[in-house]
View 1 (tube, helix red, strand yellow):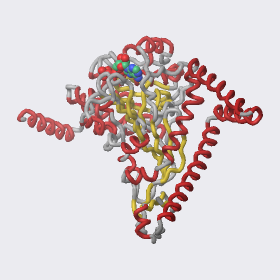
View 2 (tube, rainbow, N blue to C red):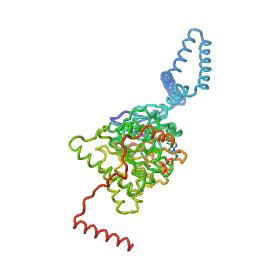
View 3 (cartoon, protein in one colour):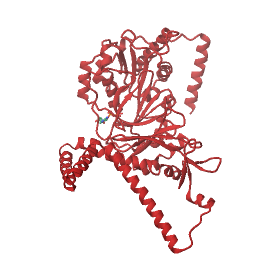
View 4 (cartoon, rainbow, N blue to C red):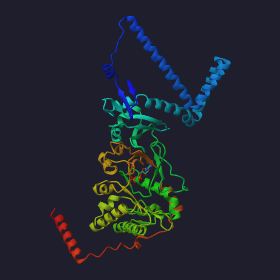
Length: 516
Ligand SMILES: Nc1ncnc2c1ncn2[C@@H]1O[C@H](COP(=O)(O)OP(=O)(O)OP(=O)(O)O)[C@@H](O)[C@H]1O
């Protein structure tokens, strides 16, 4: 294979192409043919030996403990002969086995995983261009040469690697996203994700090598500092912490029954708890399950609506009215509200969005709920009011609102089609296999943020009921409002003309419903 470096990407010219264009003179006699073959063989052997020597030195530098042992063995070998060399190796081997036996985790971190990582680097580097071409990630340039994306750097991690790839003209990020299955199988990885890079024309490939999400994660210690732009909510698939940005965001958590929505909300409250007690954050809870979810830790809420449909709607409308008032106050002052104890950040937690938009029997109440929710979602971000909504049944009414939730989490789902409804078109093809998440691993899901459209697999922290009760006792909200005392939002009295119009429209729709 003949390669050379073009402006962007790598070019490949296959042997067949070269043979077609080049005039190849093969020697005539048997002995000269044999000599030529032997010469080529020796040359390749020499190249291989040089490559192996370079790789060995690189490996020893990459695994410093191994490097130190070999250096010591060579030194003693030079002083004492082969016996000294072998003695050092034997002692090191015995020490290594004992270390692995007694402290497997540290041996793994310092020796085994580094050796495996080095092996992975070789796998990524060798044949990357061939892999791109065989996966169809190629284009032809004006000289009819084959051009493929080029691997620039490999950053190797304990559980996942990050490859920086330069795209070539004719191959896009979306093309790579469609071919992640081929890359995954060639890299022998659990998954491959394509992430946006700061530089145009480059992407990152995150290669997941180990499953870090099988074990549940404990919540952070309760006395942590609260950063509303990076709330610790669990672990990402590469083993790093999953931090959720809530300031200036609305979050949708969708998943089947038992997929871990309530635990994720509980994790969010753990992350917010110190700020709740300080009065920097106020939580408004809307619980259509009659307080079954939020009632257990009611002390954390500034306002909790749970008893009736009327209360749920009044709670939502109170939040919407607050948003409108703040927007008026902040107008021409700032573009993003900064939380203080005098003007805290509000989180509106809605346990089942579909209950409000679909299941409320009273049509008037239902449309009030939809209007208030729409208002919160369209206007709440800048004045410091974020909605966190859970949904079990991603039906049309919720899907219509989906675009207003800037961060979406898809937990285990029962059907493939639901993935697109929640995470957006093409999310499943890009790797969000929510329908394949096991019921045995609740809390696992895929997160998509509107900002960069990056898909990340995560597992939320697990907080049990006892921990939540303790949290509510220790971090109660300093302010409390009773939903019964909240005055329903006054709507404008309709003018006689509007009244007549809406009355006629109502009658028409009712008669339509009766006839159907
Ligand atoms: N992150 C997690 N790690 C480990 N186990 C979890 C996690 N999240 C949830 N679970 C377990 O799964 C069970 C169901 O979780 P949860 O009640 O949060 O699901 P849900 O989606 O809210 O269900 P529903 O919609 O029926 O209320 C929990 O009782 C808990 O045992």
